[in-house]
Length: 596
Image (cartoon, rainbow, N blue to C red; front, side):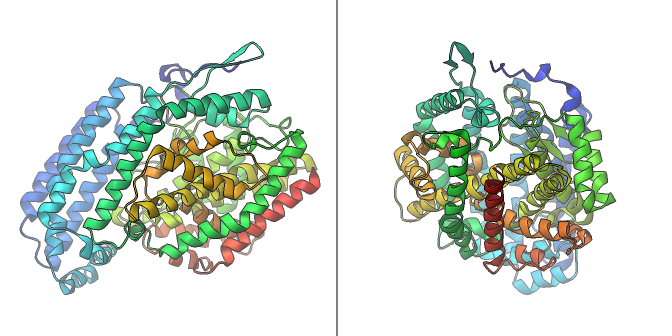
């Protein structure tokens, strides 16, 4: 029987992240907030109404960078504790009060961009030439300047930010706190269910009765909340459309892609090529699962089961460290030191507990170490998940060290490349070390079922769904739970065809991901993995010096995604990298079939 998740105070502290590496206690955190408020007051006194020339522009931006460095740290200190345990009233109140205080500060800082807006382009260009630290910020600002509103309108939008961001906050609160899943019984055994248990255990459960019943009861509960969730999502969509219109973009797509520094054709290419050319390959994999498990039919609830479920190596957290140190050593001693620190300095939060965010993420506040959240289940494939998140950590530790806070974050189009590169390096390393065909087959199947299924299928199908929904929003069509369900259902059925039975309730899958509150993010997983596939292959084969890849990580957000990729001789303006990735997936699946 599955045990209930422990409460946060019942897990081993040594396996949790040390958020107090940011601030040792709440008193120092409060002092930092007060210091931040004082700095903002000084900033206003020094610069409001006085931003007129190159000198005052750069002096203001230098001071603003210092303010933002504190902002991201106090925000992380509050948010991370809530992510680890959203049921804690103390955590809820801390993050709520922090966000309110930060919101007031954002409003006070609004004047700066408004004053930059009224300056002519020549003055802004002169300022950019006089400061390498501020050059990228100013050049980006010149591009975005035409979309800024009046000073008064920008102040109103800032004041309304808590309301405008409410849909996402409400979604998380419903999902992680209010939604309680019913237990279910199989052969007299009682099984509890929850978001964490379902996504970390039941989806991969080898007992077909248990797995399918878990799906049934899980989605039944989602169905009870579908109209409220749809209302929250529709509010998010309406907000994005309103912002696109207010800022003068031709469509909501243009608005959401502006910061990614890529044209819409790049997104469409990812979606269309994968929907049309990867789909037949993944159907081949689904048929293999059906065959090896002796299933009468392949259903939506069977897609995440393992090719060889009786061969599921268990890994202790301590062993995971050794494996990652060994596998990622190809990236050099400097990178290995980051891996070591992530374990020794408690950057990683391993335990599953009540109220913890599902899935995994990495947060790297400027001037602090990184923080990795995962839900560790002790299985070998979690090592690849950890390699993925350490990829994010390594990326931003380099970027934060070598760039100022304005220049650290690259386009979302690139953001998943360092993480997936690590994931694939680990997979290739484990395959190389394997001494028998069964182990090799298992690792290759994990590469497909976790790395590529997750990024090239799960998230890409989210993107295909998103594209249809945003097209409806641009046309002014209303959105309801039924519209969302049927759109998602249509996308799933198109991809899997007749190979997989997709029941009506699968249309509720859109309710499971927070990505829909993050703009056009889901498709970027496949974009990043496309680059990661090429880079990991070249590094592992010795045709790409890892130092060149480290240089890309150090560049942070100083270049557009195409230029970052060109630093390692990958041209993302063509279809070739994506087609090469799809070809690699098919070759891997064919090899798994041959070994089965």
